[in-house]
Length: 302
Image 1 (tube, one colour):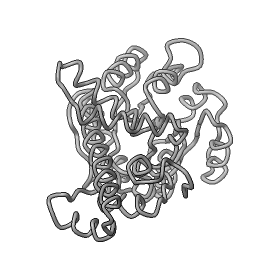
Image 2 (image 1 turned 180 degrees about the vertical axis):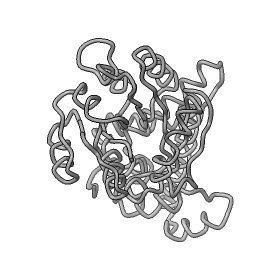
Image 3 (image 1 turned 60 degrees about the vertical axis):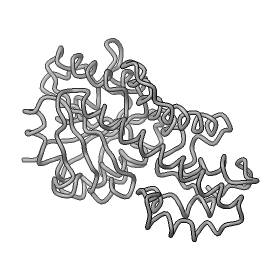
């Protein structure tokens, strides 16, 4: 019999993961989001209950996925006092999918163990369409026995397990995810600068994309972000605010080790600028608004 599931954080990614697992025959009993209308809407769609408290979520399911925004949000849902997923959590399992500081994953594992619960970090290196289709690339960290127990469930989110990888103890998957996003964000900012400079030189940006795709300038973001940069179409799949946050996580890891990461720092500064301009909720491709001549965010298509 399949375990009952719940989701905390039902934004773009969490909601589509819940839909995918519902389609695969799982019972999603409860959902929670700090934006209550989002939880109510998804609950009505998939036959779940929109919970008013975190403790209700824990009581309603055997496995709880958390898909929240940052370190503060992750700590808040696992608070030591007050309403918390840790209330009545003995025997429950939490699958934490947010991109957060690796040390926070370790904190949450320790806090859950104190009350008799288990955790697994399941860091996602994919976007909204993959969440809905069940083709997420999942990097997992924590107790290997917990990973093996959850493998069949996680396989239904990761192309039958083809895109599922165990990294190591708690925190290690978070480290790898930070590096993935650091490199992705650097590539995105670099593409925006290359295309912006090309436009300033009077070159055809679509021609540049084709050349980039066939040369050493190629990266996955050439295909995923290039056309959007040219068209100024920045519908959000991965927000500029998240790019700033994730670049900051990687940069902080480097600082802790005494490493100099100038490209990560420069990329974070670019995304911080977008946030400061009030453009944090556009897609990360919006970094092109800082590099293409004559733009500066005016007249965006979102």
